[in-house]
Length: 437
Ligand code: AMP
Image 1 (cartoon, protein in one colour):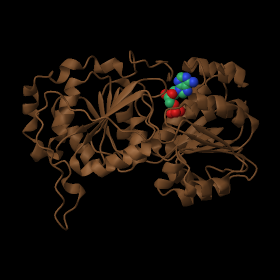
Image 2 (tube, protein in one colour; image 1 turned 180 degrees about the vertical axis):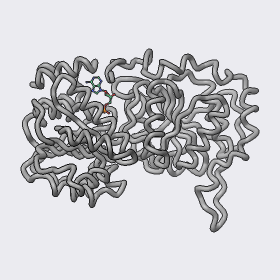
Image 3 (cartoon, protein in one colour; image 1 turned 90 degrees about the vertical axis):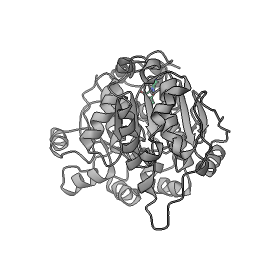
Image 4 (cartoon, protein in one colour; image 1 turned 120 degrees about the vertical axis):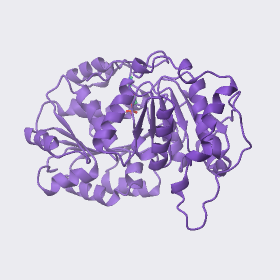
């Protein structure tokens, strides 16, 4: 069924066309009629399914013309808030509807002046939204549609009390849309409190990894992890690579070492300023940086076309994060590869992940890599900070040179044109210009 058959407004259909979308994704097909009908909705869909447009398109169609603040979308992270607001703005480009992103870490000035000019849709993180509500810059009395996005993550991050407070400040007569990758009992409790007789839509299996991603485990000694990462990067043919670290400190360290091997690298984690984060994401999107090293929370929802590889330098702490990380590549109908470096101390985590996703992930060895015996990361001495010694550079120091003796290509050779390829060509991605700015 084409978008045209979904009863969306004419200007929104033009926006969809300009975004380069041809056919609706399954969640869009199912959610758009529900949202248009005015019913509440609980949607569980895996990341990369087109969830944002599934709610943004019918909402914009319903809003019609510019008016009061009628829509509030809550997001767990700044990046998601910025990204979802951009999607709204893109789809709304042929309407008079105004949108604003409201999140912390940046000054209040420009957000405040946009609010003063008058907006229809606010996409916000809970903390900054509360700031504006306290000083009267935002009032929720005219909200007609409330969207709670990525609720599971919002609760993980401790936002439950403030989210409840915000829900309580919206009019009782409203439409509420609730999206969460999983709906365990505590989330069900929030849903019961916030929604009325919701329609439920589940797309795919919550636990499944995107089918367009092929994933593999690379067992390696703890002390050789960086060496193996460097060797993989030298060997694979990539457009852009997202590397995950469990810790901020670890992310900085990996990035430093990659830079010293002449990779162009961006870093994204919660200790970076908002401007640094914006610069990192923009640079990664544009292809200025071929690699981005990120932690889970910062990377949640990153939507960059053309991520050809996700590499888990550290095995994720929660099995669910594995699914989210892997979902950063193979977005929509694109293809991608996901590699996870596994040292012996991660065996249980891997078992949990495989149980969670209901699949065995194949184990691979990188040909020609000078594998040392598989030793685990040493236990921290009593009283010693666990995180502090992660990834100790000195242990791996000699490895960089040894790597090239293995007979596989040197750093730059197998990577063609980091610049420009960041927007995704040639790997089955579609709609290159779909997010024009
Ligand atoms: P989301 O799950 O909302 O984060 O969307 C994942 C990616 O798919 C984003 O890059 C969207 O721009 C893209 N996308 C969403 N819906 C469609 C569609 N119907 N056709 C093409 N691309 C889409």
